[in-house]
Length: 96
Image 1: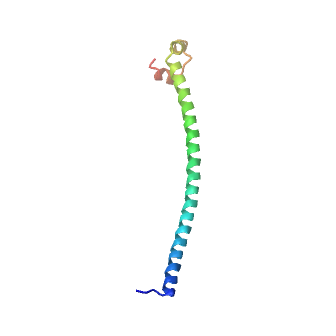
Image 2 (image 1 turned 180 degrees about the vertical axis):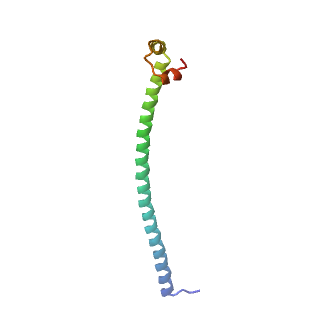
Image 3 (image 1 turned 90 degrees about the vertical axis):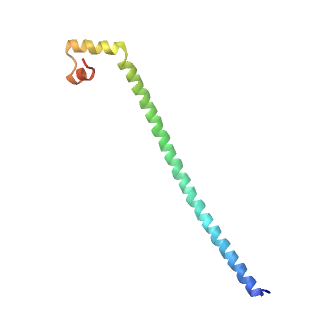
């Protein structure tokens, strides 16, 4: 059961080697996580920009829908149809 100095030295060297490998592995993982974090933040910024553009487009489309639903627009289409200033696609689209 007695361990010699040489055996203790071998065990200690093995423990140090395992701890060194673990430390290096953790450092590599931290660097990889840093790159992933930067990449995700970049993609998040792109998604936020895209979302802002889509919200602006939604607002524009809602304004157009309000205009199309307005009495002025409907009267203008009817007047244009009566004047024959509207192409066939518009007439079909508005069931006129």
